[in-house]
Image 1 (tube, rainbow, N blue to C red):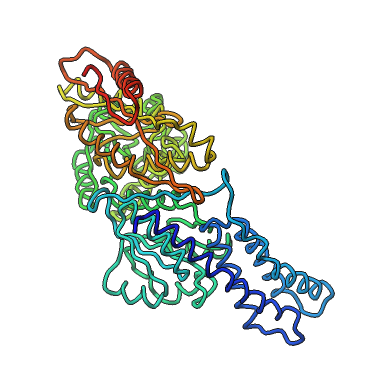
Image 2: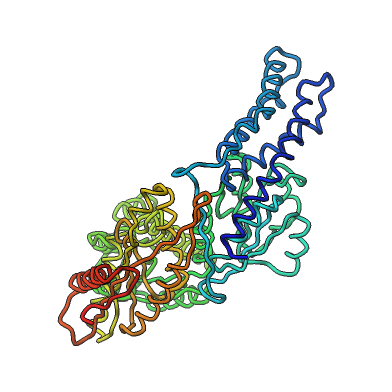
Length: 546
């Protein structure tokens, strides 16, 4: 059975079992007006409502999902109130009526507002191929999420009970856990996880999903080190993107540290200490070369002595901040200066922190790592497109300019490619902009999966993308991009019961040391090749000058 058929079959299974669920809800609703209310029945009713709130929208029943969520909130208010009041009795009667009327909200979503689902199968071994485990007691919803994760080449595994996953977890730990915080038989919050010890000393990163946006649950998830908290009905592409972001951080390049200190021995000590902690550390003892070295090494953080012969650290930091590209670079002073007024004065001139020498080894390592993590997160927010997670227009252009300068100096070859989704306006017009966003996001996801880890990807604007392939000639670039193009055309999108595919056109331009072209001209050449691909019938790759 194909991926698309799996999803449609799961959707159909959900709709087939829905009448029985609604019948059970009607039976439990009678407890609201019974002379002796059954606590067990009311809790079972609440469990049904929050499960429908989370799953119905995923299976194309958004109205039912929304109504169930509203009724669940009102039922919680009733359960928390004092029985016997006129409001209590009136609300119970009204809730019973509305619960009996839930069937009115079971009409499937209509286009163009339907939420599409992306399908398609990537080759085994491509991309990250990371291990992701899913804990979800709603088997149909879990199977749907499992299929999506597998479609993007994650090694996904579904568990429908905490006990089942705990047993497997004792033998093996995945890189990422996706956990439902409201398992029906094991608690209505993340409390149950805090008491199992499952996540204690776990290496796995955790993402929580929930049927309700509950602050207490979010707080508990944060205490367990959550990397994300997603509300049902799930936006699956965003969940997949978050999983990718977590894995990217797990496999991020080592922290690059530049140490600016005239004390050679101390600088070497810091260098060895940081290298021992898994970082890459360089020493600069000619402060006047700092901009040159920044452009060559591109560090994540600078550790700077405050007092050096002939130059002060605070003035050097101020010089660094004069360059736009280094405004956000973390600078941490290392100094024996203990006067807090002098420290504050120094901080006011361009630095982010002040560590007083002698600095405890563990303190220095932790300070550097935490600063780099936060800096990378902020840099990602500033430079990356929110929908795709790819570099923004200006940033990808800067990357191409930088690669051109390096290639020119070293005599290297590289390629630039422009990609454009074919007939994208028709997708928006027929299925809505939400579907269009899904298609755009799928291009980004597949690019990350199929291209080389060293390639730089950007969203150039709208449905257009740019790719920079360093140390790569046109033949190698063409092979990689052709593979991507063919795989993209094989993806199937489903919006309600309508399946469709989309194609993409690609223009490719090469830079060689013997060519008299600058970075801007190279981009223009790639765009001209893209035009030729469109002109020749679309869904093809054209090489500039070929």
